[in-house]
Image (cartoon, rainbow, N blue to C red; front, side, top):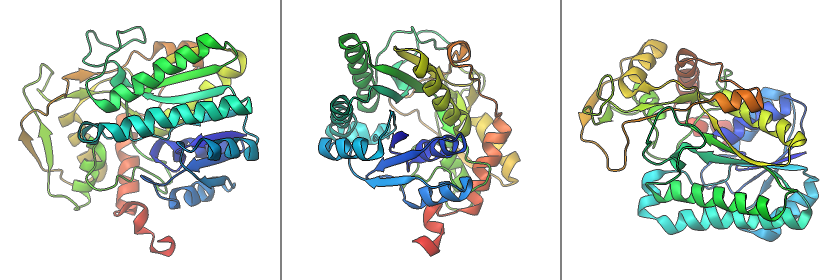
Length: 341
């Protein structure tokens, strides 16, 4: 039995699909502050299997203990967290309260219940402004915003926890830029309000919900002047969590591992690829650089291949086609399904 915090969210729901299809029993804990319960109904449709859902907040330690005990969980995959960089700058206390404080509560509950296996959802933001590329796990760590700082504080906390008690088995997965959707088109990224990430914004322009994409800066030291990022298909990312769990069964360690493709694509590369996948134009306007943005960021995924036996398999075309299938079939996200509204 695996307990998945934040399992109704974008990456969490896709990971639940892969866990269920691999024969794992799954209990989801989510407070649904930034996700829809509909996503989990669709996970069950895709897999033909059921999961248990507990509506609770990770900051509620008693609720976390109850969830761990009632589920009989042997391991936790921890996705629950606020994730918008801009919002974290405007409201840093909410990010420290939810992300850091919530993780402390969860870890205390796990300790009390004797559950000491954890896969943690971290981020490439912990590398700050890259000093060298591609990014390897030993790159110096820093953060340029409260969201990134919250992830870095949690990483340090997990390393301290393992040093204090070597029975803890912890995998820290540093994601690059998750995109795409399940091939069924039933689950995908459903941002609340204005999307914070490029691809869902592009998809909303292609489907006619928005007029154009703002390209923030075209004067970076990159091939076409626009920012370069490492985009990874969300299903590949989900499968990385299963591989991390497999490794933790054999190794009592606390280790950070990049999950990325190792290939960087520019903003204009992404716009062209999405136009091709959707058959729709994606108008854009060049705007000034945003504060805190960096020119390029992409992974060295060699350690994931070596330690987890994991590689990203889905290419840019698949990322865009799957994102378009989800967006065109669900123009209002999960709220498009009025039968479960």
